[in-house]
Each structure stands twice: as structure tokens, then as C-alpha cells.
Image (cartoon, rainbow, N blue to C red; front, side, top):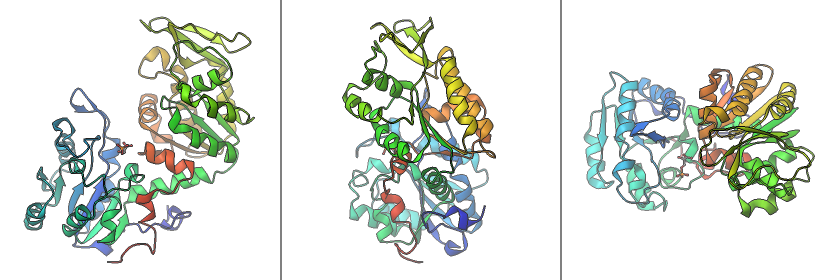
Length: 407
Ligand code: 3PG
């Protein structure tokens, strides 16, 4: 795809290689990956940085790699060390000389970096330094002094105004990475959709999704809900959702959004007892206002919902999906999410543009084995939501053409 198309909506200064040829480049990535039993659970975020890393290496750059992991709040927390991620990256780039620096960020480290011959110099979790979150000038200057140019390949962190995402661009010419450019392109397409446009929104973090739903109700033909989000809307309609996941504090906002005829709620749900989660009971959403008892919870959508949502997906030219329809980690309650994940994959990359994002959604797409048919899967969680709300992300604003220094 041509670079003109990538930058259809926001004119980003994207790295192409020749402008940084032979330079030392500070590369900000987002290796904030999930761990399970001490092992990295999903390498998607790491894989998506590889084309930019390879482009820089091909152009004889030395890379100083920066990332955060978790929220250590300015303290050294062993469990949040990036060393395991460094080892994964080494395995993905055989033959590339790499070094890991667990030093504090100061003039001494700057000196070491300048003398090092390694091709990739991987720094320890940048959030171990409290100045990162504070967007401190002193940290931004120190980081900038380690290189000649800056590339941001950390879309998932672009909603944070940190020293390594915006401060540094005051001192170095800044560029967007190749994947960041794709993020901006596809999410901009999601905000300027080809019609009919359908959004499928679910998941647990209810309050973080209201602004996105509100925005989508203005521009999309249908907004279909599931998961904990749908439970909150059921409660706002006066249904008793028993012990289901929901957020009481958002009932008022849910009530106001319910006025839209574009909003679709599940027609049927799968209920289980909260203690064992062994049994599954089918409940049709109808006149009976009691969907489940206090010791029960809703953990999936039912077949009538899958069929109704499928009919919308079948007509769509744009489909955006964020958040599972149920408790996808338990196979018994993953049917709704997996069925819809497959339907979106079947329609995407051709008849419709299919865009998805968010940690649990990624996991569901992985289970469905349909990932390769999606047009785009975002690495962003909070950043994607803020982008889709229509907000300007600080990390992206500083990478627009004409905003920052030239090399
Ligand atoms: C993410 O995983 O969404 C990003 O890495 C941002 O993390 P944060 O919410 O801790 O800033």
C-alpha cells in the first residue's frame, strides 16, 4: 500500500530509512506484554516492531531501545524487568548483536551507550525512572543525548505524555515507526468508515468504553454490545443481572445511550452459578426482568444474539471490534465471542474492512485462528480507545509533519 494512502487522514512523518542512514536511533517501543507463570504470554506487540527494527538495521543504524512494562511508579520492581522480553527479541533477531543495560539513566549510561558497538542497546524499564511519567525535561534531554534521531513505534503508549513519548521530540528529529503509521491509518479509517458500518463492543472495563460507544453511535449504523458492558446496559433497562460483572457508577450514562435506535443488546444470554461455573443455563431476554439470581452471573451471549449480530456483520463494509462477548478464557462460555470472531474474519480483508483491538480481543482472535483475515489488529488498549473516542493523542501529535525538528 502506498505511503500516500497510509497518511490519508493524519500526516505523519514516518521513518523510511534513508533519512536516518548510519545514525544512532532512539526507538521507543511498547513491550508492555502480559506474563503468565513468568513467561511472556503473547508476543504480538513484539512482532509488530520487527519491520521497523529491520528497516533501521538495514540502514546501518544503531538502535537504543526504550520501553516500559507495567506501572512500577518510579521504583525498581524485579517482576517488571524487561530482561525476559530482551531474551525473546534476541531469539527473534539471530545474528544481531544486542546488549541489555539495567543501569539508571544518567550521564554514565549515556557514555556507555556512546561507546557500545552493539547493534541494539536495550535499556531497562523506562518507568523505573520516575521522571518518565512526569515528562521531565532532564530525562528527555538525557535520552535525546544518546542518539541522533527518535522513532516512536509504541502506539499503545501514545496517549501518555511521557518523557520518552513526547518530551524527547523537543531535542531530536522524531519519526513514526512503520506499525504506528498503520495504527493511525486503520484507526482513522475506523473513524471515517465505509457504510454500512458496524461496531461490536464488549469486555469488562465498562467505564472506559462509554465515550467510544457515544462516538460510534454518531457515525456507525449499528453498535452491538456484549460482555460486562451489555450487563450494565441491561441493568440500566431495569433488568436484574444478579452477580454479573457490571459497573453501577455508569448506569446513568448507559441510560442516556439506550435512547439510540442504533444500539443493540444481546437477545439471549448464558448464565452460570458463580461458585463453580460448571453449569450453563440459557436465558432469553424478554419480559421477565430477572435475568439471573445473586449467586449467578451472565458469562456469554446466546445463539439468537449470534444470529442477530451475524446478520449485521454480513452487510457491513466496515467492522470494528473491541472486547469479548463473554468469559472467553473458559471454553464453555467462549462460543459467542469465537463465533463472532470467525464471522468478522470471514467478512474482513475483502468485502469489509475488519479492525480489532484490545488485549482480550487479541486473545479471542488468536483462539479463533482467524487473525490472518483481519485487515488490522491494533496493539493499543487505552490508546486505541482514546483514538476512537476522537481524542488527539499527544505521542502522535508530535510526530505530525511540520511539528518537530528535521534531521
Ligand atoms: C498498554 O498496555 O495499554 C500500554 O502499554 C499503556 O500502559 P499504561 O496504561 O500503563 O500507560
